[in-house]
Image: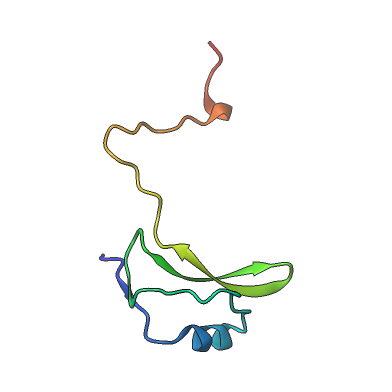
Length: 77
């Protein structure tokens, strides 16, 4: 699976389709959305849908970076 998405609609068309409020600032987004690049996301805030630019994909863990421990599952020493 590639996780490559292509945006074929304008920001206005996406906002209208999802009945979402557009951001006040015009966002310059690439046509091809890859993990780690910004993409459009519709989220809910204060009872209304909002179109927002967010980094697309799951957070990446780099080599040498350990897993964080969950304090609720760690036994006291």
